[in-house]
Image 1 (tube, rainbow, N blue to C red):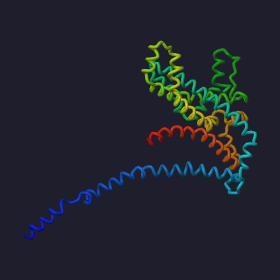
Image 2: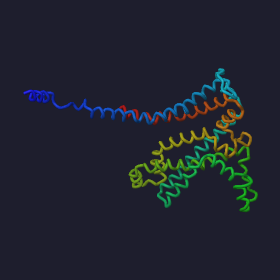
Image 3: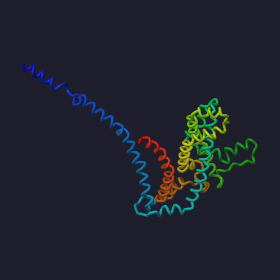
Image 4: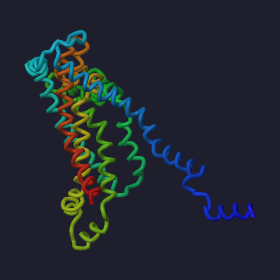
Length: 322
């Protein structure tokens, strides 16, 4: 009778609740661990980025408003260092050179990159090998590129010696030591290195275009130049914008290539804001001025990157809202 009542009480209570048992607890712990695992994996990278990127940006900005010279100090100077930078003649030379260098660098890379991409998009033979050849310069460091082109453009070696061996003894390619032409040697080396990368971007964009539109235009009698001008190139607008942002960013912060190729010379003929910043910070013990010029370069890059990132993120946010 007692056992019958006990069994009846168990049956009345029903089976064990699966939401409170040991299996449910293990499942709950596993779910919590899986939820926190991405944060644990990303936290070291986030901490390092906050300290060594944004922390140093904040530190540099603070130094730009102080009277720091050889060592950092916290004597407030307001915008004095920025005024000193803008009044310095070398800064005007650097900004002028940056305008020449960046404009030619961006335009030539876009034109050459697009031309190479259109060429490779014709499904020519050895496309893979040519693509690798055009992309290879971007795999080199800027130091290697600068050193190689310094040898090529050396008036006593490189092109001048080559032309002399060919019998063109009157040809003297001395741009690298010419005050007026030295900045163009930097453009030549930079375009050589980056054009293949831009080509890869345009080639990916070309391969993503709907071929049905091109076939329809061809059936209607449109010629290929007209198809490229009216159909293909307009659809490459996102690629143009991305390449433009990347190239301008690379141009503003160019340093290694200039130092390896010309050493910012002859004189200050190839001075850029980056070489100005390094020179005043580490060789002339003007830490405040160097920090101010670095902040001004950062603001220039931010003025380009922030609108681009905002335009890229806005459609996603709108789609998420819907």
